Every structure is written in C-alpha cells, then in structure tokens.
Length: 160
Ligand code: CO
Image (tube, rainbow, N blue to C red; front, side):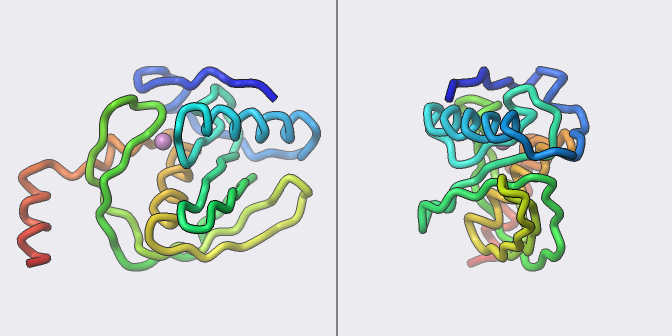
C-alpha cells in the first residue's frame, strides 16, 4: 500500500467526469487499498478516486457509527428521500467547511472488489457521506452546494 497525493480545489481533474470500471483487477484492488491508507492518513471518512487523480467511478466511505468501510465501484443511487443539512468538509478543500442540504435517506447499489453487486440503504451521516462522494464522480464538489449564510439563518428559524 502507498499514500497517494490528494488533489485540491483548483485542480482540473476534480471537475472531470469519471469512467465506469470495466475490469476489477489487482490494479483496482491496489487503488482501493491506497485510497483507504490515504484517507486514514488525512483523517477523513470518505475519498473518491478523482481526489487521487484517477478518473474512475470509485469511492470509499466509512460509517462513523459502525466503523464499517464501504468500497463502491460503479455506484448508482437508486432512491433518495427526505432532507438534512450538515456541516461538510472535504479532503480536497483543506481547513474549510460549509452547510449543505442532502437527502436524509439514500439507497445505493455498487460493485465490491470481488465483483459482487450489493445494495446499501443509508440514513443520516452515512447518506450525507455517500452523496458527497458520489458527487465527486461527476466533478461536483460540496462547495458548489453550500447554502449561503443569509439563507441558512432562514433554515434555522424554521427549525425553532
Ligand atoms: Co470530498
């Protein structure tokens, strides 16, 4: 395993569309292992392949509650509903955070490293993390979706 260089906001590769993975081979296994090592080293809970300069439809995400690690190859979001607003950060946007609205629930399918298809239903933090990482595969960063401060005040008032 090896650490990979994390690309930062401003790097064009983060804005490019990614390609489907056609063969899940040892190169992909190495990429997944390296992504995990890189994510842990950077103290993150999710990482998408474009963040390490690889334009493939792959991301990893950790469930903060169960500590389970999910590796998604060619993910597809099947269902989403509800809404939640959380403060998000991104390893590609160091030392910054912003409030983003995401679905409260998502159902997502993907392929794992053993070429088995799986479906995951997630809520709360994990749903937010999955949506954040999924966006990376389409060149979208959380900064594109940050709720401006004046609108955020409106949301807070609604909750009271
Ligand atoms: Co990110």
